[in-house]
Image (cartoon, rainbow, N blue to C red; front, side, top):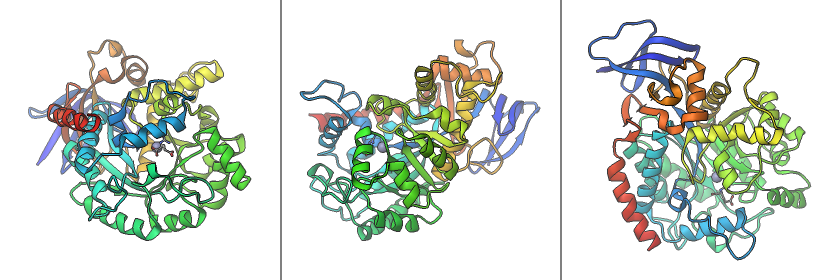
Length: 452
Ligand code: NGQ
Ligand code: ZN
């Protein structure tokens, strides 16, 4: 059984085409024919573009979105936010995680993310005991992905220490901590939990240079084989200072020096880098994983996006804390950060006459796929993961080609998204995920329990 979408215009890997018939068989793009008439059973869409990868999510944090925006008694910072976050997850069980993650994933699909990289470290029960199935919470993430249809790259997180130099972990971290043997078992069980998903990818993630030491990072690098390896790095200036005090090197410098960083790797944040680090990271072929909304929310700093682009670096976007879920806002803020720093405009467009929106979209599409171990773009053999934009939205009227992407990312935002197909199945219509009502109901009950 095949379904066919007919797009008046579609963004294909080699550019915009008109009257494109996209035949989908078993969830995959089987055939693409530009310049084709519609057939009677075709589903007609106006503007089709590929779905994006969200390369960094902590789904459970969606449940505390907006709850850490009230000033505390000492100077608020990333580190005080982290204490609020640790408290929020004190009672969360597997069913709570399914409920919160599923609504977050439905929201991601509604804004154009068709794959999520879940950087998952909430492994153990509230007392810090391993569940009977050590991957119980990973299975909850897989269930949420299954319920919503989003593609999943699961990144079970290795977390062993509370700070640089093997410091003891704290009580707030008891649900995360493992050693290499327990982690290997957890990851094997997580692999089993992914079987029901059509195109899941299993990677892994040392949480940060604070939580994993050199020997552990080397072992994890081997354990990953060809799969994606993600790590948080150089997000806060205090983290850079602590790393310098501990090792005499800055975090990105330390990692590039000690680990075989290559295209399998995704360095999340990499906010604070010297020019040399920026150049070296770009050359390594690793992806820089940027989460502009969360980085702004947590007061991290601004990633040197312009210099990294000039150096030919690969990058993609993530929604991280999920304080607000919107692919267009992530990309817009990525460009706006550079405008505010450099006091210019259209800084990430590569050449005169080119669209900033299209440059942001295409770069993050490629980087997201690379970091998540998936393929991207509307192309034969790829999963049919696509978005249709509403041609009647005021911000798209009279636009064509790349100007449609500019209208979406800079002006209309998520309201421009009409339909979303994931693995060939329509999961969003008129901007709403098909299961949103039921997912919202369950989410409300869950939050009432957790916050009550
Ligand atoms: C996390 N989040 O693991 O959720 C982290 C905070 C930490 C971000 N870095 C905790 N945005 O880094 O220790
Ligand atoms: Zn993170």
